Amino acid sequence: NEQIVLAHRPEGIPQDDAFRYEQIDIQEPGQGELLLESVYISVDPYMRGRMYDVKSYTPPFQVDAPLEGHMVSKVVKSNVSDINEGDYVTGVLPWKKFNTVESQRVTVVPSREVPLYLYLSILGMPGMTAYQGLLQIGKPQSGETVVVSAASGAVGSVVGQIAKLKGARVVGIAGGSEKVNYITDTLEFDAAVDYKKDDFKDQLAHAVPDGVDVYFENVGGEISDEVFKHLNKFARIPVCGAISTYNDTKPDIGPRIQQTLIKNQALMQGFIVAQFEEDFKAASEQLSSWVQAGQIKAEVTIDEGFDQIPNAFRKLFTGDNFGKQVIKVASE
Ligand code: NDP
Image (cartoon, rainbow, N blue to C red):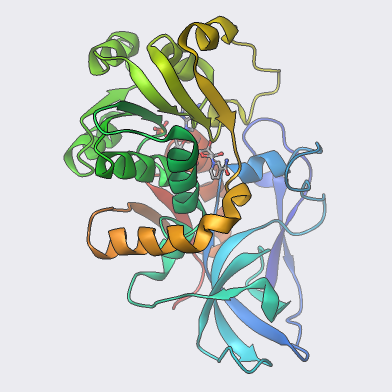
C-alpha cells in the first residue's frame, strides 16, 4: 500500500517536495468496516486552503499526515451486510491506494449507468456547488445576464449550463482559445471572453451590453474587479471561490467595492456547498436527470497513476486542466 502525506506547508504553487510518498501496510477490515481500492481520485482547488495552518470551514491538513479528498473506490472486502465486494463507493478519504474505513464514511454510487468519474464532477461536489450557489444565491431569471469565471471548469461549466436552462444569457470567462471555443461551441454559452488576451476589458464590455445581473465568482482578483464595473441594479454575486489568490504569498489587495454594491443595491454572498445539505437529495436527482437527458455536458481530464496526483493538483492553478481534473489510480 502507498500513501501521500503533506511533507511541509508549501509557499506558492505546491511543488513535488510538498508531497511525500510512503509505503504502508494494508489494514484488514474489522466488523462494520470496508477495505477499499482507490480508483478515481479528485483534486480540488479548496485543498490548497487546507495546506495553510489557518482556521477555516475544514480543519487544515496536518504535516506528516495523509492528504485527503473526494474519491471513487472499489469495495475489495466488506464486513457489512448492505455493501458488497465489487460495489463502488464515494467519500472523502485519505490519499492511499487502499483505505480501510467504517462503512458510514462512504456512499454507494447510485447508478453505474454513467461513468464513475462523474461522481467527482457534475454528479458530485462540484456539480452540487454550481447548482446551489447559482440557484440559491444567484437566482437567475429568464433574460438576465449571468457571467461566470473559470467557466470551462468543473463548477463554472455547470453554472453556465444551468443558467442557460433557466433562460438566462450566459457569458463565460476563461483562459485561452481552446477553452473559450469550447464554452461557446460545445456548451453553447452566448459569449465567452479570454482573460489572458490584452483586450480582455473591451471583450468583456462587448459581451455584456445589458450589464451583469448575476456574477458567479470563482477566481477573484483583477478579473472580478473588471466584472464589477458592469453590475446592474439588484445584481447577485455568489462568491464560490477566488482561485487566483490561493497561492498568494502576500495579502491580495484590490479596489474597494462597497460603493459599487451600494449604488447597485447588489447582494454579494460567500457560501460553501455543505451549507445547502438539506437540498442535496432533490438537487442530485435534478442534476442526474439533466445529465441523462444530455442537457448538461461535463468535460473531464483524466490523468493516470498515483504518482501523477501532485502534478494534476498543480494543473488547477496553471489552467492546464480542462474541465474536471481527476486521476485514475487503478482499473475499474
Ligand atoms: P476548475 O475545474 O475550474 O479548475 C480551476 C480553473 O481555475 C483552472 O482551470 C483555471 O481556468 C482557473 N484558474 C486558475 N488560476 C487562475 C487565475 N490565477 N486566474 C484566473 N483563473 C484561474 O476548478 P473547480 O471548478 O473545481 O473550482 C472552481 C472554483 O470553485 C474554485 O475557486 C474553487 O475553490 C471553488 N469551489 C468552491 C466551493 C464552495 O463550496 N464554495 C466548492 C467547490 C469549488 P482557466 O484556464 O480558465 O484560467
